[in-house]
Length: 244
Image (cartoon, rainbow, N blue to C red; front, side):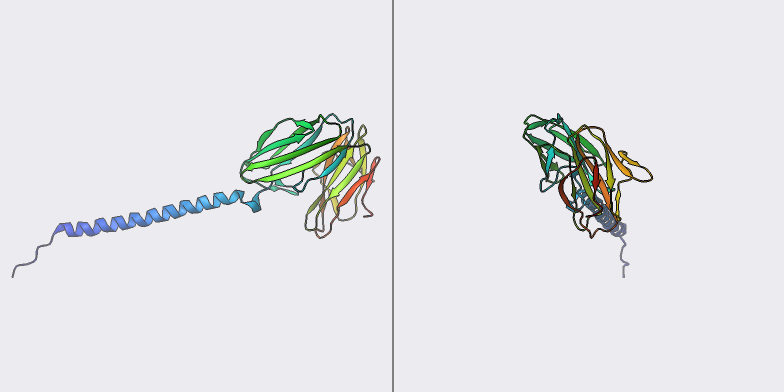
């Protein structure tokens, strides 16, 4: 009986098939890895990680009173959580500005996502009764912040806060020539220690406002369950919220 001939091509075919199988598995793993990287990158600007805020503008609008003699005032926009600048939007934020009754120093702009960023807008009133400012984001998500500024005499302050917030915002409107504002804060609230406009002595805490305008100060809360919201209140050169 004749012995069966062995064809070398059979062994080569098996090896070639095994090679194709290995390459296929590697391709799938590479694609999956690339997908995971892209998936993680895309999460950087998801709504829960999208921070876009202002010292004066709010999502549900805000109302301020300013001195009729005010020739211009500043508004700040930033891409981080108000009470924690370490948490910021990692994608570039594109925005546009609309002003009724005035003009803005720019009508469009963006905040870089490389780090916690802040931009200052200068608003110049042309209507001596009311100025409305609206800022809309286009990328990566849509959000609207706005406020209305009414010309009226008298220094005023207000506090914006909500239960659960780690910080409140004290807004001060100076219609006079400015100066030092003595602050009396209750136990459990600390003025932002990084704010260079604060002046501390042994017996008092003062906020330096060099001229008429709108100023804001972050108040850090020890107890987030408290709400320190306070409506517009007139003041001369002292603000006392210790008895609230």
